[in-house]
Length: 258
Image 1 (tube, rainbow, N blue to C red):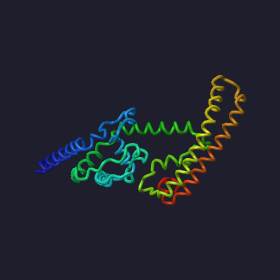
Image 2 (cartoon, helix red, strand yellow; image 1 turned 45 degrees about the vertical axis):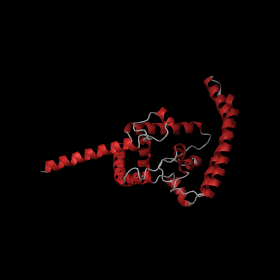
Image 3 (cartoon, rainbow, N blue to C red; image 1 turned 60 degrees about the horizontal axis):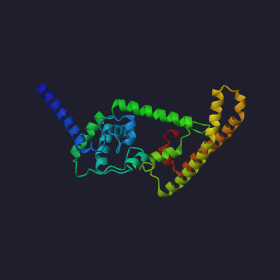
């Protein structure tokens, strides 16, 4: 008897798993890629691959029950403010159309269970972590700041990622002020980078040609002054941005500051 119950349970589980897969293919596969995307495919996608969606979901929301409830609710009532993806990605892909009335809640629960069990693929997680690591290294190499540290964040990048998030809750007045800060910051840094690039190239070429380091002392002094100015702009951006935000918003963006 006990053996029969176990067989029935296993059989039921297999049917449910198959049902979830079938529902995903029926209702989701026309927009969302089901396979692991290759790096070169990511920029060409018209909707985020499920690997990316569930990767961000599991990063933003802890606990399988909460994750499942989020999927069920979001598919029926999608909005930019609810999205677990970065705001700039939502702006790129747009908000998905609601499937309310097209899929039942029971079906959505099967879909959610299947997605959470099967995504993201381990190979995708390794790939995305490598991409993020490379992006961080590239940003560090091209940074004009004297101080490069996670403890001094790039506020403009953080805000782009969270601009429309309900959790951050920016008001229209705050957004207008923050856009002004962003414009001033980006403009100032762009001018400095333009001056830095030829100076840094001169120093690199001198070293490649095995010249005496003293031959590039003037260039080094100019580079140091420009990086000092860039760092002042960076610090002013942090100060101006956090002055516009309230304490809860600062904590949302910068939890490690607490």
